[in-house]
Structure formats: structure tokens, C-alpha cells
Image (spheres, rainbow, N blue to C red):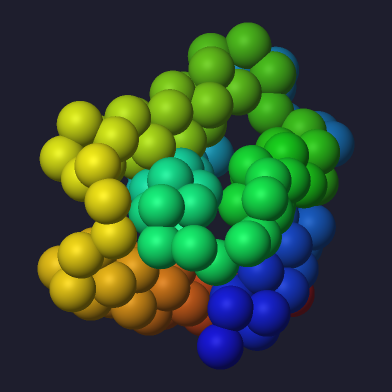
Length: 125
């Protein structure tokens, strides 16, 4: 279930990247990208404490999303802040893996998939 989410996120960011955009101009889908960044940050933390042995997988996926979208200035800062907010929010709440953390992981993966599908349906050519 995780691999399709990552593939869709990368596909979306590739389809949505447009070189003609102004450097710091907000795109109509920036809110969804920021939420996706938060989800990736949360998954990076939660999967780590739940013993997934994925290492920096979610951080790498975030970097790939940024690389594909190529935001600059404030857009990039907002995406990075979203990732950090997702990570730090759960770092404050969970010190070890709990059943609630596992439920959160499942829900965030599902939400990330839904965001990816929605963005693809609305903005991909």
C-alpha cells in the first residue's frame, strides 16, 4: 500500500511542475502539497518508532517531492515547514509505538493516497 502512495506523489509532483510559474507565486494546489508534506513528516517519525526499519525513506520521499516540484523561496519553505510540523507534532505526542500510532499511520497513508489521487484527477494532463 505504501509504494503506490509514493509513486502517485512523485507522479503528481512531476505533472504539476510548470516552469512558467513565478518564483514565489502560490500554485492552486499548494495547500494539498503542504498537507502531503505534513503527512510525509508524520510518517517519517511514526514509522521510525514503530520499527518499520525504513530508515530515511519518508524524508527521501519528501526530498523527491521537492525536487520534482522545484519550489523556491516561500513555497519551498512552506513545504519544508509542513514536513517538520508533521514530524514534530507526533514527536511531542508519541515516545513509543502504540496501537493509536499504528492507526494514525494507516489513516495518514490513506489520506496521502486520497490527496494524490485528487491532485492527479484535477491537475494532471
